[in-house]
Length: 62
Image 1 (cartoon, one colour):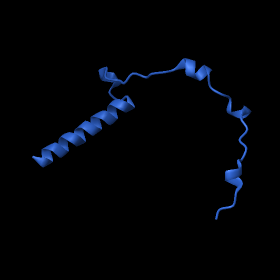
Image 2 (tube, one colour; image 1 turned 120 degrees about the vertical axis):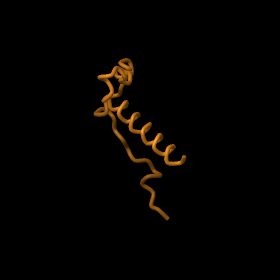
Image 3 (cartoon, helix red, strand yellow; image 1 turned 180 degrees about the horizontal axis):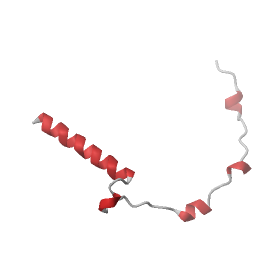
């Protein structure tokens, strides 16, 4: 009984892995890809950011 449960869990994991990788797309079982184009337009340009150290980061450890 425990072997059957283990085998079913293993098959379920393999099926989920195949589904998330898109290998089941030929069968019409591909996951939907959600995109957020508005969030891409609101991104901050990382080249404009400047990170400065704070006092806590520059204090010597005791």
